Length: 134
Image (cartoon, rainbow, N blue to C red; front, side):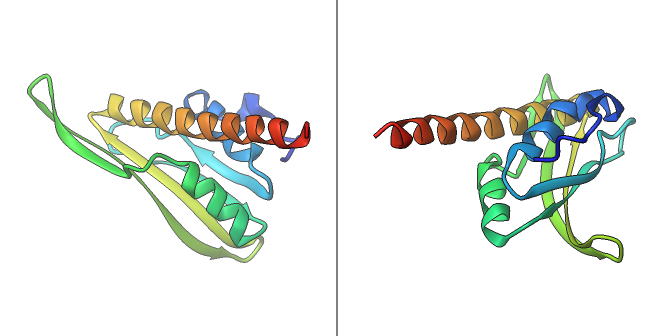
């Protein structure tokens, strides 16, 4: 985990999500944006030190990557996905991208991802405590 991050400089709406992503071993966030207006995607760009580290993070995310329907007689959509790119300064990087419409659905999706990562980290910590005590 990168302890040098100034979380005060990170968009408030995704500060906790960025923090949780960084707790995963061998994962380092590079850039992030919560999306500031309707139609603007949010993202967290990160590096993974190994395929195993990437797998642990991805499998901790919610199982439902896309959800659409109606809420209060209004259509909604919330989705997230991962894309991969090569950046000369960083090499292979991963982009966790997310969006929601209406815009409050994007905030709801961020909370769902935070909850899923928190639960995975708690279960991992509890398992480590059990197995390390024997």
